[in-house]
Image (cartoon, rainbow, N blue to C red; front, top):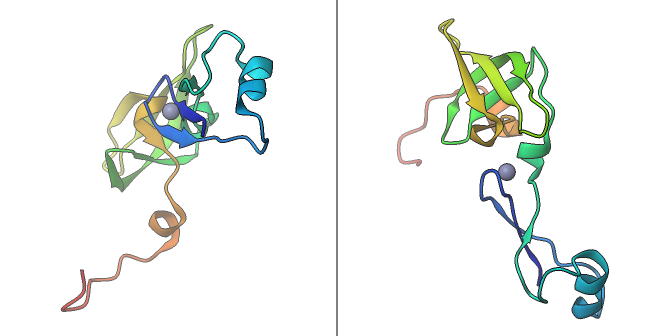
Length: 118
Ligand SMILES: [Zn+2]
């Protein structure tokens, strides 16, 4: 098994390659790392390019949907993303703090929970 860890947000991903010889895979792709070492790999949420108008949520609090209003870029650094809260105020976050809403959060109507369901 090859374990990738995002160096920006620490998300872990199992990226086991489809091959029989893991040692050869390390030698080919990560010759500087020992076999079975974790591998740094930027996760899809941190690699994503955001643009004004995109809807995002905070990873720590995905119940509020923000709208991207701007991206702050600097060479060789991860981007910062300025978003607008539904109440109108703007905040700038690191990409490691935000992600796209999941399908259920973006499209499901917010129905009241029925009695007895959690
Ligand atoms: Zn990440």
